[in-house]
Each structure stands twice: as structure tokens, then as C-alpha cells.
Image (tube, rainbow, N blue to C red; front, side, top):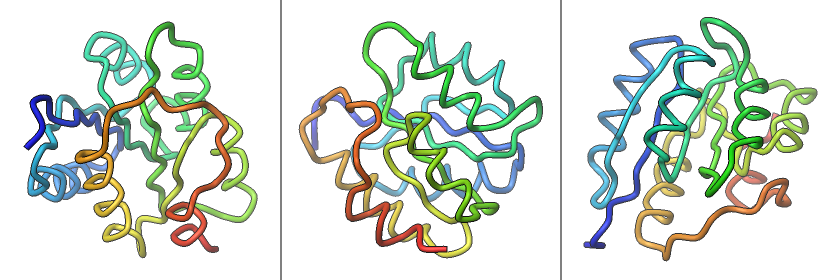
Length: 147
């Protein structure tokens, strides 16, 4: 087990989804959920304070969109969290904007929980690096986000 666990922050306006993600992520060794929020404003403030390694977010939030949150995260100073979009409403038109607004990975809720869990496990056991913004789609995103 690594000395420092991978810290994860969850953003979704559906409490059942957040609870399910919390349960799934807590089963992964070296992962710690450090916070949760349902809207853009609340999550941005907490993310600034907590500085998690990973942010998993939905596109539909209580007070705005996940795209706005991605933009705001990209403007943060210091180390940026790895941003993972986990959304039900991923049409072909939304996948590209997620990536261009700073998401490193994009997953569909209805079909990709196992793949996202594998990615989180991989991130938890890999050396920590600050993710580059606007990276090309990797094999996880390409494989799991087909529309």
C-alpha cells in the first residue's frame, strides 16, 4: 500500500450515485474519498481547499454544469486534479467538449463503472503526477465512451 492514498472528490446531484461511487471507490485499496458535493459552487470551494488527486463529476449539477466546473478547475493555481466525467447524458456532441474543457477521462454511467473502477485502481497504484490538461483520449476513455 502506498504511503499516501489517492484522494477522490465526487460531484453529482444524485445522492444515490454518490453513495454508490463512494462504496465502489472505498473498496479499492489506497483510495480515500475526501469530499462530495452536488453543485458547481460548493464543489469548487471544497476542491480548492482539499486539493484531491481526482475529481469524478457528472455533467448535470444542481447549480450549473460539469463543463463549467471543468473550466473553473482548469483555472485553479497549483496542482490540478485529474478530472473524470462520469455522466449518463453523454451524446456525441458532449464528449469532445468534456475533453476540451479539461477532462482527462470520460465514461458513461450506464456502462462503464467497471472500467472507471479499473482506472481508479491504476491511478491509486501508479506514481502520482500532475495531469496535463487537454491530453489526447487514452485507451480507457476511447474504449469506454463509445456512444
